[in-house]
Structure formats: C-alpha cells, structure tokens
Image 1: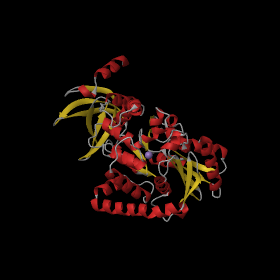
Image 2: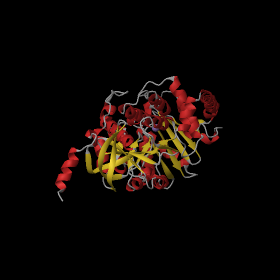
Image 3: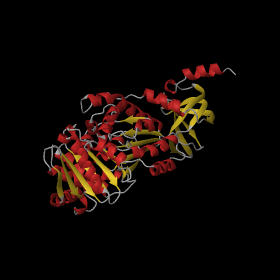
Image 4: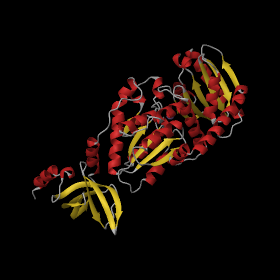
Length: 465
Ligand SMILES: [Mn+2]
C-alpha cells in the first residue's frame, strides 16, 4: 500500500479548505458536538483546522476520535460529509487538540494591573486562554472546582464566561485524595477531560490528591495565588500562579479571581473586568482600586458561601447577584452579623507581646457568631482594630488558629507561611494541618495544644523583631 500517498493527501486536505465534491480518505478527526436531528444525530467533527458535519443513526460520544472517508456536499450552506467509511480511533485526540490550541487566536489586551508580576505571567495567561478556547471548540468535558469565597467564586464566574463547565464548590483550601477519587469517579467514560482548580490546590496537603488526579489521565489546570508549597507545577499540566514568577510575599495579592479575569479578557470575553475588584475586595488585595460596591458584593458572596455546602453550583451565586431583593437582604444580614461581633472581638482581644512587632490574640470561641462570620473573618475584624503599628493578630479556638499580619510586621520579616512551615517541623505532633499566605493563614492544631503553639509563635515573632 502506498501509505506515503495517503499521508500526502491528508496533509493537503484540511477540513478548512474543503469544498463541495471533495473526497477525503481516512481523515483523522474528533467529534466536537452532537446535535439531535429527526431520527438520528448530526455530529460536528474537527481535524484541528476546520469543521465538517455528518449525519448518523449510530451513537458516538463527544471527544470520540475517528478515521473518516467520504464525499463533501453542501447542505443549505453547511459543509457536510456523506460518509463511506468510519472507524473509531482512540489515539489521535492529543495531536488534534494540540493543533487546535496552536491555531486559536487570543487577544493581547493590556492587563488591568501593570507591573513585573503580570508581565512575567503573560505567557501563562495566554496559554490558559488558548487551552480554554480550544476546549470550547472541542466540546471538552470540564470540571471547575472553585474555592468557597468571593475570590474563588468571582474567578469562576469569569471562567464560565469562556467555557461551559461542571462547577463545584470546594469548601477547603486543599485538594484531598477524597476529592481526587470523587472527580475520577465522575470522569469515568469522559474522553480527555480537563479539571480546573481555582483559588486552591497549591498547599502540600493537595499534592497527593493532585498526583492521583493527574495519573488518571485528566488534564489539570491550576489557577491559584496561595504560596506554592506543594510544588503544584509538578502535579499539574498548566500552572498559573504569581509564585511561579516571584518570591515576594506580595505575590499573594495577585488573587485567583484577578488572574481568571485576565484569562477571560485574553479570550475576548467582554464586560468581565468588574469581577476582578470583587475578588480583590474578598481577599483584601490592593492591586486594583476597590470600591464600596465591590466590598458589598464580596461580603454577600462570602456570606452565601459560608452557608452553602460542598458541590454547590455556580448558578446559585450568579442568580443571587442578579436578584436585587435577595441580594439586598443577604447584604443586610451579613453586615449585621459583622457589626454584632465587633464588641465581642474587642472584649476578647488580648495583647500578648508588646514590642517592635506586637502580638494579639482573639479568643474566637467566645465570639457570639453562628457560621458567619467564620473564624477567619473574626480574626480579620480583630486585625482591623489594632491600628498601624507592626502587629500580628491570632484568632484562636479550641483546635486551630488564624493569622493576620500587617505591613509593618511583614517588613520586619514576620511571615505567617514561614512560621507555619517551621511549626510543622518543630511541633509535628500537635499540628494537624494548615497553610496560607504571608499575611493571612491558618493552622489546625490538636485540641489542648493551641496555647503552646501560640507561645511558640510569640517566641518566633520576638526573634524576628
Ligand atoms: Mn484567594
């Protein structure tokens, strides 16, 4: 058989430049869409450069690789294929995906934030954009897991303006082995799925889950701004993180929602910019101007996220933000809850170290709060009360604590993530988990040992200042 001849013909015969009457032989392609029609289905196929349609009574899944032969005809303006032969082929997906990714056009718009970090992230932002646009063209199956706060949720709202995805709320900063098993289970039978983790996944406690997910064959994209202590680049295929290009503790301020908005803008999504300051408001980042309205939206999202469970779909938030009455009512409740705790926080706050960097604790178990505001927000409220002098505020409760550290203390080299890393080594028996940013982080501690961990933290702050 003259296989060279067939190869030559295929090289010439791209779906892009096919016309009526052309014949194709064993063309490699992928089904990118299935539409019902009377008595059967219309399938859209792509060879990575162009698209064709064919009708069939057989069932094929989206993502199925095929070798097709047939003749092209014009059906009221659509180029369709009268199929002579058709053979399933599982091996060609990656090369066609690669072709599509190489061919999609992204928009190079100036970023919303200028500076070294966004400049260095440009290439990764464009790669994420290409991957998502190509995924859309190919009808790829996508799972989008987003962190359950204003940053993660506004980022997810931005990404779903690019592609349709199965969205699922993640009520933890770690991607656990359980999470991996659940995702792998849900992905059974899906061809070349893409899993996106947004605003979480960088911690050491995510590494094992990520390894398993990656080994399952899913492609993994991580968009996160948490310090990359879990070497997430090794356990993912595409890693968009300010920590990949910077070691400054300010890297964290390039929040996940902001990064997602830049990806959406590179995809040409209009009117997506408004989500970036909401993400910044939620995570207290000042890379963009944040207005009162952004803070409002962030607190509404945070309030709703606190009361909603794992796996929550994104539409829940989208609908609430569009429903004026619900939005106003949630805002009132959230603000009242925040105001209500202020006196409690003042009463339960103690100065534990008076020095160049002071340390305060807030006993979060004594604050009358239901689920909202949670421990982190209680700590933040304490933090807002201490003023400008270099300070560390620790919200403490029976089996954990939360750090908030201000600029003055950061400048003196007091970084929560570094303290946590050394505590994990020195007090491995007491500390059961934790992580976070230089300015904001949290620890899980065995009950009964929170006091000794606080003492140790005070010692470490003293050493630095
Ligand atoms: Mn975040």
